[in-house]
Amino acid sequence: MGETEILVRAAKNAGLRHVVCSTLEDTRELLPVQDGRMPVLREKCNVPHFDVKGEGNELFRRPGCRLRS
Image (spheres, rainbow, N blue to C red):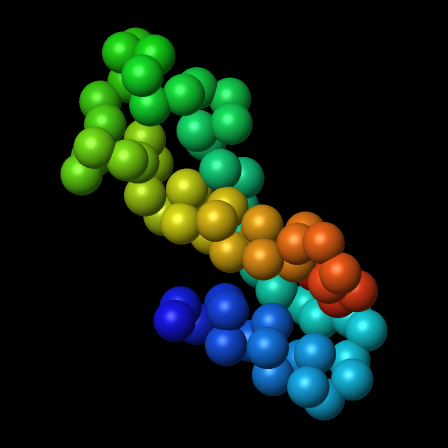
């Protein structure tokens, strides 16, 4: 389980409604891995430090998640 997932779970369990979390945009939404214009690392990331934080951002967007980052 990733750190952001632990944060989301702990915040939900504590009843928090707002969490300040620094994230970045997932570059794969703008430039898919299959595009070929950009090197791909580990067959899944264009810019790992952006893409991984972008994945964490999605945890706050899950259905039923009332937390906002």
